[in-house]
Image (cartoon, rainbow, N blue to C red):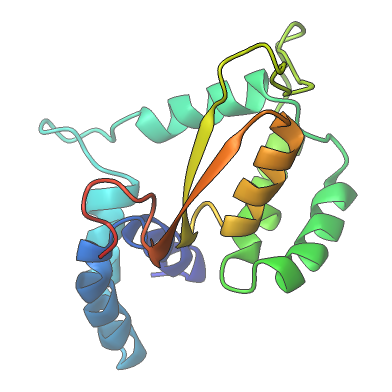
Length: 172
């Protein structure tokens, strides 16, 4: 069990409030010296294996597509600066928004025609609704506020709650 294992398991299990008890128990076990529950959760939720034994390639595919089709800075220093700034803005998961993204800077292939913005909505278009939960650990509320401002012609629906999104029973 590594610190990355703990961080990854926490990030995944915080998506759904129903998983918080499992996470709390796993962290308590780890704090008392037993990392087997964290290891089991990593094997189930982070790097699952197919029924016949090999690892499911989902995470690799997700990374390769994200790294090549999004506009990531190629300067590692930009991620270090972003991590330092993120600590103040996102005190619980600032590391997942900067330091964990450093591999994207090093990815060698990039899609040349990926649309990178601006992401605005003309006033003649239907108004998009941005739904957000106030204490979502993965997509923090301040990001939704910035998105609505960037889109221009958008409305914000705020749910006072936790878990990742307001759907699927993740919040009360």
